Image (cartoon, rainbow, N blue to C red; front, side, top):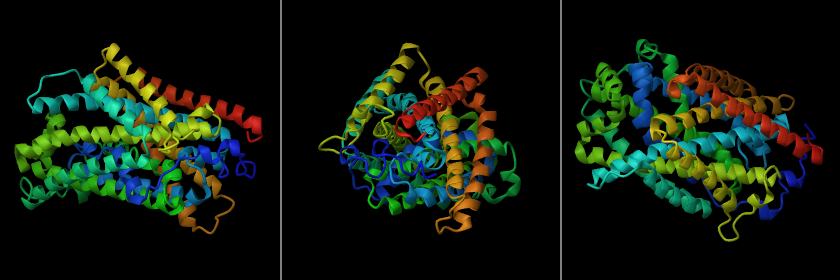
Length: 478
């Protein structure tokens, strides 16, 4: 352990040179906006929830969000307990490096980078068609999806280059708007008593255990991707020892309550059986149809617009996360040192941000050249990789927490550093089994593609660990 906790300055210790540190003044609210925006709540409500209702456990699906929230709160208990002892930004890989060694940490970093860049790129496949729908709604011509992706890409690249606080303000506005419209829809449905009374499926054991509970849990777990990125903003946060844990808990609880309540309200809006039937037959328009039924055409049109902005917010949030992973890796001399020089005026990881933009641009360009369907192929394939990658990251981080506190509790209770992380680990392992068992369905029914995704993630870890071993050996930490 001692050789891990005394990493030299060149590997990003607390004494790292000031000119390789990001600058910012983010509080709890700003970080919560960042990570909740990454989870794309309106995108989940409009896309994942109908799938969970149709393919999962029907009227009992809202309860799976409660289960998922509990599992992730157990994970967060150990994650935040370790936060005061991880002095540098880097999120998961900093925690893993601290407990399991430098090579393992860099291997995890490579998996994280692949996972986050994949989702940032893939979401352009949803944003493009959504932008086309908004333009057509306004009476404009039908344009190819990649034009809207290109416009959003330009704005994302600009904001990623600037100070993080500008991005947080943009995300705050967009996130507030999308949550507000859905809350209004929820209140109208509840006030009108639903289709024929409010659903009891959320508390009915028979409904919760009906259909395919495993598929329901799978869709619930993947809806939280993004919440775990709170720690990547450590260098730009005010009093990170307090801000990061508070932001992590707040983001999880906000997401969990929003998903559970809204999915319950949507089911109530059609009735238990009617919701399952409508989600099965018209899943892609489920949210819009519900809005049109309860708040009229104007409300439905507004949701169409906010769905587009929700996807943009998701892209911007993941771009910021991925840029900071690149910055943190370059601080440790794993990537070129030039990428860890913050902008003189903005204090942003501008070079790392441009590097991520280049990779994403290449991915989108290849999707256009090869004629991939933007949603059914481009987004689905990349989102499948992200889902597996992020759950694996949380599993390894849970192990790191248990190892780190194995010999010294550092004044923490057994619940916080052993029992809760262990229970969270069990829940995450169960989620991984569900995801891998159904991965071929998630990526369009191709078992070959599912194996390719897993192989890419394994290769990323192996490559990262090899690089970590080489870099660590130079300074005597491997």
